Image (tube, rainbow, N blue to C red; front, top):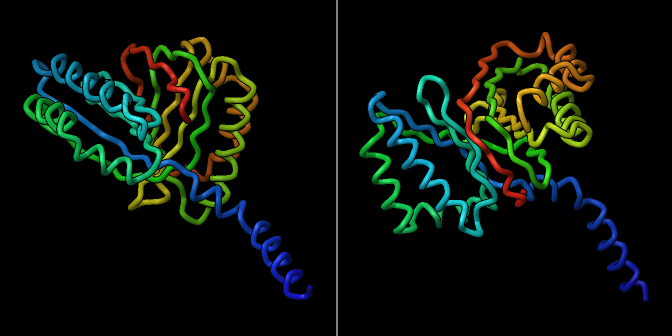
Length: 230
């Protein structure tokens, strides 16, 4: 009887310790793919990249691929996989390799930025008129506090603001204090309402001395439909 009691107690204690670890394990595997080309090849490259992303998203191991092209013709896409194993398997897929070969013919530069998923907050459905992106460098000494403020703003905004479809935050694997944000709004009015709203205003005020550098990227008009898989 005593042995059974101890076993049950160990199981209970083990289960109590699970949630904190489980949250980290459950995070998807993410990375950023970046493409650019000479101006005359940009339309063809965009078409090839779009075809590749569409093919990629048809696989069960892919949760979503979101991104777009900025005014300088640079294309940035956040690839979100169930896990690293799924990503590796798809990199070795023969059909996808053929499509990537076409991209390499047209691109002057291609690159992969290794990243970690900080928080992927999203509605289940909706279509955004254009993705907005930002690169933020955070004071390392204030990194933990910044994460708390950012997470609070992201969760509140997506939950309570109808036009905020998704706020996706990643950090660079090599530089954990560098954040890359992808923001999806239903339209420009929704974006303006978000910026003027209480959640962003509270966030913006709180992080004034935490953000040491900021780069904002506005992409060309391009409908981005939520996958519903995240």
